[in-house]
Amino acid sequence: MTKLIDQLTGAPSRRAVLAGLGAGAAAVSLPGLARAQDKTLVVSNWGGDWNERTIKFVEAPLVESQGIKIVRDLGMEPERKAKLIAEKRLRRGTIDVIHINEGDSVELYAQEVIDNIDFSKVPNYADVVPALKSKPFFVPWLYSGVTIIYNKDKVPNPPKSYAELWDKKWAGKIGLTNQLYFNYIMMAGLIKGGNVTNTEEGKARLIELKELTQPRIYAAHQQLGAGLVNGEVDIAVNYKARGLQWANDGAPLAIGYPSEGAIAVMFGAALPKKAPSPDLSLIYFNAMLDPKAMAGLAGASFYAPANSKAELSPELKAKVDFTAAEAAALKFPDYAHVAKNTAEWLEWWNKNIAR
Image (cartoon, rainbow, N blue to C red; front, side, top):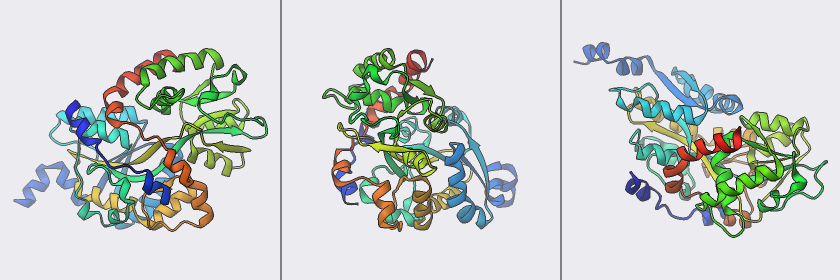
């Protein structure tokens, strides 16, 4: 498995690009075929506002409008990944599309539970930013970076780097979310001249951060955003896109790009190997990458779109994307390293930070 993961991560650098830019009997006996004829598609996705936007811009207008019934299996990614892996022993699975981040796609491919995608049958994939086409088993969709979000009314001199968070003056003022546990471990490893694979030292530094500042730990993004709005915390470490969403809702928030370079994140989807209706999955992937849908998603979510033909206004593009210098400084995770360690990291986070 290690050898396979290493082979999967030899993708070209993205930084330059980001800177610029018997049939009847079988139908009865095989439930998967019956489902396909009934045009039912099971989509594993996050819940909350992420799922609401997926429905609004992709699923309702572009998939369900074709007469395809979508059954939504919602939850956090560790549970959804575990379910997919557990179905490996079955002759046929229950999930047709799984929404995941790029790192999870590497892990699941190494586990042999997601499949290569025939992108010749996904026409909109041709317009994806070339540097994001790094894996044959992953549909790139939206991307952002882990930044420092702060209440500009209460924090006149905000941290300008990840490292500056390690200061007693921020005691009780920092908010983190369990959803980004792996990003925080990489962030802590990155400071003081480190890198995103310096994660053993990163874990030790997170213990130091906990002792210095006693950060509030929230279950999910939405709760962290509420904590910023109601004054429970003044600073959050989260995706730029999330900060822009909360500011757009009226919160007095600003976003600082860390001097170390923000840790990049990309979200998308994958095709389970035992998907009951893989042909419908391809229709779904094409809808995800529809340029109009992607423009709508960018405007609502403030994530940068993977489709280069998504028509964003200059103002929106400047808001959701990164400057040339910021894009060049983005820190892309070593997904081979992440895939080998993520399960142990989650256990460590739950025992040492989340409780």
